[in-house]
Length: 306
Ligand SMILES: NC(=O)c1ccc[n+]([C@@H]2O[C@H](COP(=O)([O-])OP(=O)(O)OC[C@H]3O[C@@H](n4cnc5c(N)ncnc54)[C@H](OP(=O)(O)O)[C@@H]3O)[C@@H](O)[C@H]2O)c1
Image 1 (tube, rainbow, N blue to C red):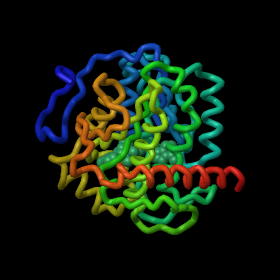
Image 2 (cartoon, protein in one colour):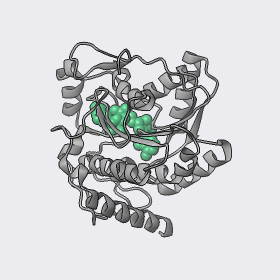
Image 3 (cartoon, rainbow, N blue to C red):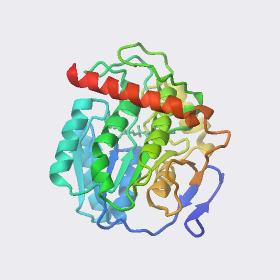
Image 4 (cartoon, rainbow, N blue to C red):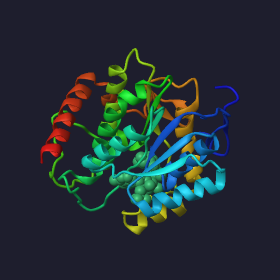
């Protein structure tokens, strides 16, 4: 890793990725890239001359982000494509468009997520936080696997959270219209971690690497649905310990670009954190991961058939 990182201030929080690697000729999909960590990641990869696909649910915001990135980088190969990652039919339509337009996909960054305070369900009957943070990334990734496999050194980056430590996942669970418990964010990020580990096992012997990354605590729009007191604590009281979205993008960029990155790894602060106290033990439960995978496939098929 020598020469590719610098740590400033609170070093455990604010490592900066300094690698100069180009992504010229590579196609990158980033979900939820109109703001926050996703936008900053897209901006950086556009500067590195990638073909960057901004996969966003809001066309106005997606187009505005695209225009801003082109203005800042001069890279004309930045495009917006509509994707609501919480809606399985939207994912299927998005993948059809990608198949028509792209020969390969080299990098997929599952970044979009929500934190909800109130109960909400998607039009397909899925609990919204779980649909956005887990079911959506699962379906999008599995539908794009063949395109990813065509690329040498392709990568899938699942933007997770240290909140997965507070999550619990039961392999039999079916979170369809089951009500809101307030734990969905933690549970969905743990499910995403189990998915990362299981996908890594399934992808063995292919050139595709899959990583899970916690970006740090970032002053983004993520907490917009929480009561103002939470936002006040994160944006003001905790300010010295939190990151800007640009700083939050660094661990994601590290996983996207650095040669040292290990498939299946849990990354934080641009370092491998597997088997530390920050990673829940259940992340290594292969039986649970397999069961969760099967349950997830059933849930997604049910969405298709109504
Ligand atoms: N901020 C933190 O402290 C923190 C900590 C740990 C992990 N993370 C993770 O970092 C990632 C990025 O979060 P952030 O902090 O940058 O949050 P953010 O500023 O709220 O950005 C989230 C992005 O996801 C998009 N999005 C939400 N639901 C979507 C959907 N159904 N379909 C498509 N896009 C959707 C949002 O679009 P709209 O603008 O249209 O809503 C937005 O572009 C997330 O995975 C989050 O869990 C963040």
